[in-house]
Structure formats: C-alpha cells, structure tokens
Length: 250
Image (cartoon, rainbow, N blue to C red; front, side, top):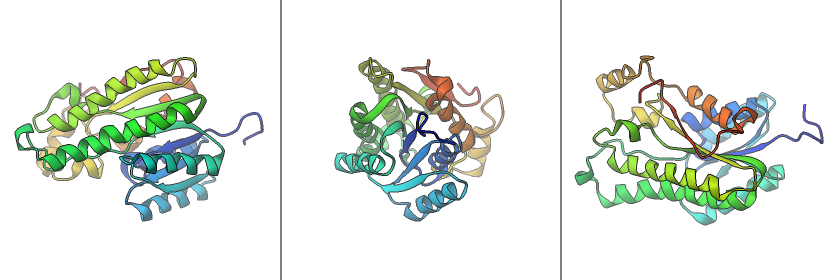
C-alpha cells in the first residue's frame, strides 16, 4: 500500500497497446507503478489493457500520441503529469519493422523515412522531454535489437535505427549526470509478437526459434521482466548499457 513517504512511481510506456509494450505495462503495474499506456492507433486495445490493469487493482491511463511528432510527445508527458503528478520511468518501446525485410538496395524512401521517424526520432522526442521532466532517481529504458549483433540480411535500415538508439542511450546516460537517472537499452532477440511474426513463413519462424541455445522464441513477458529489472530498484547500478535479452542468441 502506498504511503505519503513512498508514492508509487509513474511510468510512460510508448507503443503499449499490444505485444511487448502491453506486457511491460502489465508487469510494471504489478510491480506497483502507475502506468501511462501510450498508443498511436490501437485505441480499443489500449483501453482494454487499462481496464484490465485497473481491475487488478492498479492505476493506468491510455494516451494517444504519435511519438514521431514532438507536440504529441509533449502532450503525452503533460497528460501523465496531470493524471499522476509526475513521471519516473520512460520506456521507449514504440517501433516499427518492415514486414518484407528488404535489402538495403531495395528499400524505398518511404520505408527508410518511416523507420527513422518512429524508431529514432520517436525516442529522441521522448528522451528530450524526459531530460527535463523525469523526477530525480528515474529511469529510461530504450529499445534496440539483437539484430545488430546478428547482422542478418534484410535488416540493414532497421538495424541502423537501433544502432542509433544504442549510441544515444550511452551518451544520454552521461548527459544526465547529477540527476540520478539511469538510461539503458534492451536488445531483444526473436520474440513471439505480431511485429516479429508478420510476413514470415512458419519455416522461418521455427528456424529462428531454434537459433538460441535455449531453443525457443522469446515471449513478451521475458522482455518485460528485463525492463522491470532496469526500471526497478535492483537495476540502479546499471547505466548507459545495452542488455541483450535473447536467450544467448548472440
């Protein structure tokens, strides 16, 4: 139970209406945080998730915002502060991946621009707000990918967006010196979500599921557990790092 001396922490999770983001929201709520479920288009799913969290005794709101738009992100942070009085944790989960996985030479301008707009500028927009608005002792958890280590054909532009995130993560952690705010990234391996499964054959899914020594795909809850560690009290000495959560794949 919260007391005046130990208020619940408040977490914004971007792209949280489904998949890994929804699992993170549920996990952080179970850990006692008040959660802001951000979505861009999944209003129904976001509202259902909020209802489920509240029914379990948690506190949550759903806020629509396109993270690629700076004004939307500012409004997202405004809504979080209005609802819960402040912000302690930012989880930059929102991201896109082209289902066709084109080679670099076959990637069109629209795909390139949209990948960088959501995957890079979206996190830039939220981190810029977080620098001024996260409370002392807060945490930022960004999302990279284990594709950077695997260097699989077809992932060149997507991987480039996530390499940018890893660099920003390390430098941003140093720029927040004196605020006691940790900044880290999670780099999932193949995880059984719609984002990963979309466009892949069953043979490809099974083959990739066997690549890790643990011989399975990750689950959204696996990734949510890693986020909960970095955003919680046990992760306070981890800073400026990228954690590969991939079952030993790379």
